[in-house]
Image 1 (cartoon, rainbow, N blue to C red):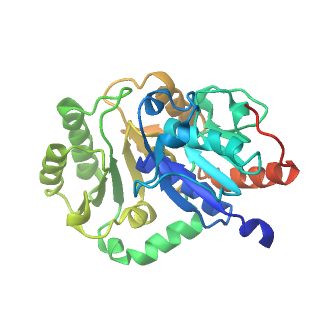
Image 2: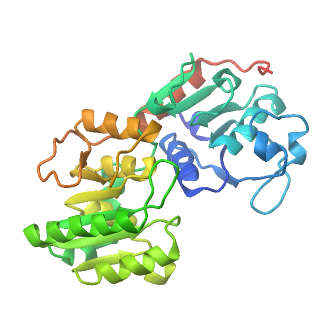
Amino acid sequence: MSSEYCKSSCWVISDGAAGNERQALALARALDLQPRILRLSVAQPWAALAPRLTWAARRALRDQDARPIGPPWPDIAIGCGRRAALLTRCLRGWSKGRCFTVQILDPRVAPGLFDVVVAPRHDRLSAHNLIETLGALNPVDDAWLAAGRARFAQLGQWPAPRTAVLIGASNSAQTLDDAYFEALHRELAGLFERHAGSFLVSASRRTPADRIADLRRRFAAWPGLFWAGPEDGENPYPGILAWADRIIVTADSVNMISEACATAVPVHAFAARPVLGKLGEFHQSLVRAGRLSALGEDDPARSGPLRETAEVAARILMLRQCRRPGPPIA
């Protein structure tokens, strides 16, 4: 990328949700930018109506330090999530069209209100400025994995095969309740009986504390590592992905599954019941691509790693170079 482009100022905007910020930050870094990270607080009624209600929106927006949002406006804004889309949309007008606006995920308003919209196929959008992906943007590539392997070299001491287990939490598409984890435990016990090895477990910030305590007790019966927060030391997540011989992911998170599928090892999603809706479409797309299989299939179809962030960054660079600043679309 040109040195002029790399000097561009950039804001990465989210509501503070880890998955949203991670996607926007991964794209900014793929563009070789050094962004200012904004975790928005949005007052009502703007929060409930974001990003539709733009009238007097500057009154409603604050950063993580409770400061108002003001100029100088960035050259590039990358937002992820519905509330972030309010600021990303407004920046196009406040900067008089000079800020190049990129919105990740369905913004819930016309995509033409942004310069570029990046959205997964299961969001079912159609627009001239749409860049469609299969999964979520993420930083996982060979260099990221090599750095994780080196930083967490001690994980290589656990016996192979090393099975990474990524734990999320219930959402509207998949319920991770007692029955779910009982079924998962039976599957993992059978896996250990057949292949031995070890388990490298990472729980999400969304995983309830009582669930973590139960899982910690269960996994203590097997060799491996269990990480659920700072009380367990530095987050070894990059090392877990880098050292894994296979990855098992709970079925609730597009982000976790996308990052697992960006590695080169087999990935299994565990769903105790059918995954429906958009999340189900995402699962099936990865199954058809040969990148994901159900837990219990010891020899899944395998294809190359799912890595889309660099390609998205290249397309955004091309689109920005072709764009001439002009008046914003209201």
